[in-house]
Length: 226
Image 1 (spheres, rainbow, N blue to C red):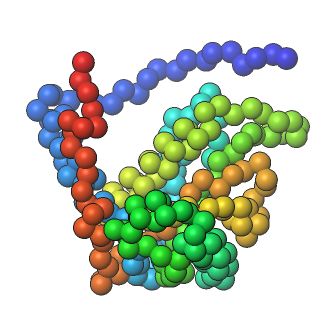
Image 2 (cartoon, rainbow, N blue to C red):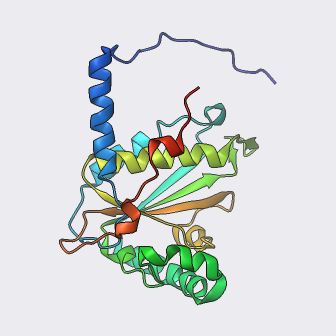
């Protein structure tokens, strides 16, 4: 089999900034991202699909193993589909909070104020189901191996959350376990594994967030400089 040859093109380099401007931009981005909070109280206010498309395109620009881009994003605004997802997710969550999670896990998430009821899955204008492709399929129907799938999809999801926050939208990373019901409801092939269900929209006017979630580890705890 003939392998594709390396075909280089000139790099479109990012603007070279002075050290003071770099620091100013870095701190401005830090301030922006420090405002991000996981939200569970959403408004039903309309969000333009074009905005979601642009943010998903940003996610699709993420680096991935061998540039195979092993992800698929299903963006849902249809009320009936959101209702089906909520009903399936709450069945899994009832088992989780009913004892499946174990005492330690439930104690750890108690300060976050979560429970098995997930009305936001219907209230928010958008749900984005992120799927990780275990392997690809070429035009001839042959399997194509993917590399570093969890890492690649995790990076893309981070890009997506950041892009959504940048335009003023709130998000919630929802991960009921198991999530195979998403394959059935959203008609995705078995080679795709549900990675995360992202709830997207504007927060409601009465939204609150847990104080505990705003406590982040300091720089000296999360980093080392050598």
